[in-house]
Structures are given as structure tokens and as C-alpha cells.
Length: 282
Ligand code: PAF
Figure (tube, rainbow, N blue to C red):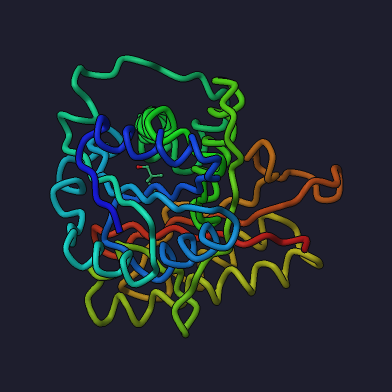
């Protein structure tokens, strides 16, 4: 597995690969890798000639300095895990390498970044869009892989790719879960025993919401989910929204449109935020 810390070195290798028509799959990450990330690598391996993974904890997507400080950093184990998956190349630049000058772009995503995560984490999606655009400019992949767990992020990235007319296929990948249903996330390692035990309620509540959605009003479903999760003294629902998948706007009248409906949730376990979602009409 090749490792690169500078754009110049990565670029030189990529140019050689592209000159022999290799198809490049790209998996951007912030490290602290888990099985969810590895499933993206595995899917990318199946669909491309070469897979490049990036590891960069992007400071401009954190709206709370404590969250950035506490974000797990496990570079050595990350590299071992990627090597075991036969990932072809890893790019782990420094902050200076990624942002030689401060980035000033402000994207206009309309309502896409004003709701849910966007409402609670101001500026987060602008930071995500900026770093993903920079990484795409550096790697110029044919395909890029993102987990469905970050459903709003996925919609933002698709919108950014459209706005910037980038020639990259965005491939959404299924959420990978722990045996008790908790969506895998780099933040899970920060949960204490009780928080970790009760965090499985999030998936249970989403499954309940999906079942209730067929027979109950949206408001009733939202209330039942919130009650179920808040019954744990270790968890608190920040938001639970039932939205149209394409616009992320709340479903007010069921059946008014035929687009996919998704239940999206954020739950606080102490200072740790957990997010998850479930498609309701599949
Ligand atoms: O989902 C993540 O890990 C990050 O938001 C991403 C896409 C790597 C950008 O920093």
C-alpha cells in the first residue's frame, strides 16, 4: 500500500496510474476507521482498478472546538486496517497541505444545509463541501464512496458535485451496524457503558417509526420515537424529522408525493452526538 502526505507525491503516482487507464475509486475519511469505512473500501475495490483512501480530520467542519479536539485519531491502526483490505493508496495530508491559505468559499445549498444537522451545526456542511471538493480536485477519482448513515451529507455532496460540474460518480453505500443495531461511527468509542447499551434504542426506535408511519400521522410517529429514546436517562433526542429524501424538507402530508421518505435522527449521549436514519417506503 502506497502512503502519501503531499499532493505532489500523490499526484505523481496518480498521473502514472491514469496514464495506463486505471479507474480510481476514492474513499474520503477522517480516520478512526471502523467496519463501516472498511465496507466502503471493499465496495470500491470491487468496482474500480485502484482504491485511494484519504484520512484528514477536517477542522473547518467542526463547529465546536472541543469536538475537534476529542475526535479520535488512530493513524497507525487505520493504516494497518487499510493495508489488510489491500487499499492501494492512502493520502493523509497535514492541515497546512490541505489549507495552504484559509478557504473563503461559501456554498449556497438552499434549504439542504439549513435543516437537521445544518440547524444544529452551523457551517458544518460548508466545511464538508469545501474539503470534499479539494480532495476531489487532488484525487480526481472516477467514483467516490460515502455511507448512507450521513444521509444529509450525501445529499450535500451530490449538490456540490452538480454545482461544480464535477465528473465523479457519487456512490451511496449501506449503513453498517453493530449486532444490536447501533450504526457504526467513529464517535461510538467515546460512549460509556450505559450510553453504549442504550444507544441501540436509536435503531429500535427507527424501526418502530417505519412500522408506525404506514398507519399513524407524522406528528404521532415523531412523538413516539422521542418518548422511546428519551425514556433512557443516558440519551436525549436532539431532533427526529421525517423528510422527503430529495429536498430534506419535512413531510407534512403523507402520500402527497411519491419520493422516498427518510426518518433522520440525532441523539445526544452526554456530549456525544449520534446520528442515524432509515428509509420508510422501501
Ligand atoms: O464523513 C466524513 O468522514 C467526513 O465528513 C468527510 C466526508 C470525510 C469529509 O471530511
